[in-house]
Length: 607
View 1 (tube, rainbow, N blue to C red):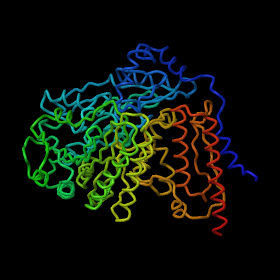
View 2: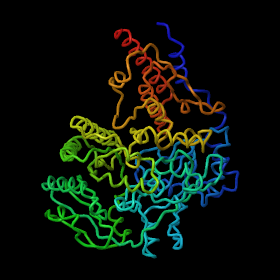
View 3: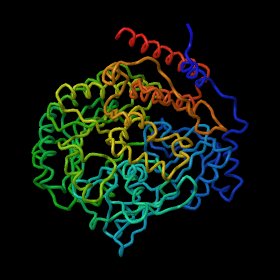
View 4: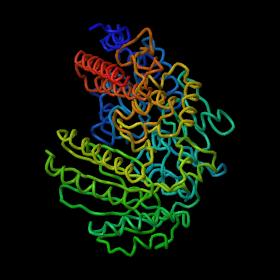
């Protein structure tokens, strides 16, 4: 069979390129030849081990070629300039803040440099300005502890171990969101290191476009080295965790459903519903995290929860540091997060818990290890949250386009035994797929995916709405003209990965897999599949730098976007886990050929 030039190009692009004359060791050597030398640590050193071990989830503890630990924004600037220039722009590097993300490669790297910001972890309160300046390596527990000395706080993470940087760049849901908006809405200024090493301030008066894009746009623009946030007077709350027998589930769901619809009547209240199974005790229970952001005990907003008989309660008046220590999960486990949003519908909540219980039974029969926890969380996302965001100038999340109250589901599975990685990832994906399918059947689906809870097989940026995606893309190109944070920094969610979908007017939303429906929706006039192969670094092009883009208008762009996303994930895993590149190339080429022939055959049959 004759291969068209497009198919031949696709296969050639999947073959390994000649090895670079230089490697990631050269990139580390470049840093070591500068004034940053003392801040570079290598495998085998105590500093290197401490950095790797400090990642919250064990499955993300990758081992880079070296780790840079800057102390100042100037250090970060120097490091970025050095890495962008070294080896013709071929140096790959990762950015690590608090280290709480649960998927490998988001904030670490193999065969590259990790810029570990964890030593930049101070918080400074400016009483006159009414702001707190927080450095990017901080975790919320440290932030709250510092601000408590002045009886003030900021709207930040609800667990003390969560990092500041990723939380704020992804939006940031807080105990205070119903009162003051998301964490990102309360940032008044960012200090940012751009791809060319320039340090700028982004606020409503200077670089206002970047200021807005950073509010949910993640790490697509530069490295934020300081966050200035509005403070909230008084850091005392009434809150804690209350546990219940699993037989009370329906009453909690009914109370939660009502709570979401009535939160605007008392925005000081916060509720997280948790259904959790602990294997070591074989216990499946219900727990509520109830927080009232004022030191008032037993407010009426919680009446429907309080009347349910509990098995334990830690409710008390305490500062936010104390309460967020309680909500912190244990480190030292492997972990997966998967999330989606739905219309506030009681049947959806019931189905969520039903699926949770079934996944537990599957884990009991399939798990090799005996130490694991399976949590399913339900959290309010009412219209009220968005109203505050709009009043404060807006953010990138795009929630203002929805008129209904929503709730968010998080499947959070953690386990000890590496042999169970595939099982728990499969269970989490199956749970979310089933729940999403059911939501569409009853008209309770919503496309929004919260970036901070998203897994690497999800595409949260694509769910922000076409206007916001276009805005993020435009701002990213303006401030990072050479695409450093799209190509040299492979971790995180990239705006370049969603452009094709958004240009075609389609967001991936809760769609998790390629389906024939995508082709039917986009039309069947398919004659040939043609790709342009773009190497982001012409002088240092390898298989991991390849991006596939649709060049033929007759090809459904959504299909191409799905293929591009699939190829990127395969290639990222090849690099992270050192899979045989020849096998990977053959798989990609074979899959592409099969898809091309299937599309051509379908086009012929449909005529």
